[in-house]
Image (cartoon, rainbow, N blue to C red; front, side, top):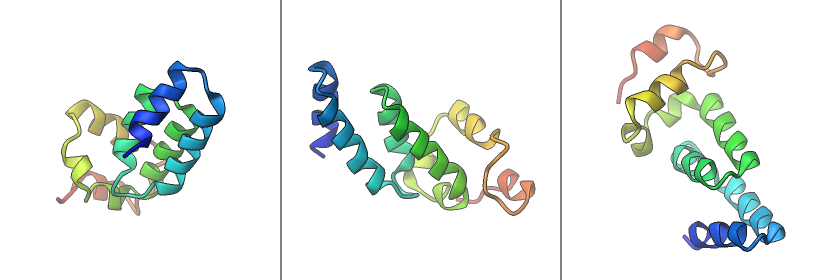
Length: 101
């Protein structure tokens, strides 16, 4: 994906309009299957809006996110951080404690 190369280069060259365009494009691509990877990418490259959008989607679609391959590759610390959020969109807390892959 070209944006994985273009966005860091734009950050280094301080091309804010290119960074913003890349971030906006990635926000439009966010879904339950890729939000964890995009969140990690946004965190590494200090894209605060993209990071916030990713985290919001993770919370909103948590029960779908846990079914993704990206979720299975998370560290235990990352899983704890996510499930510790008070505003996860789950019908009841037992759903979180009984995650099924």
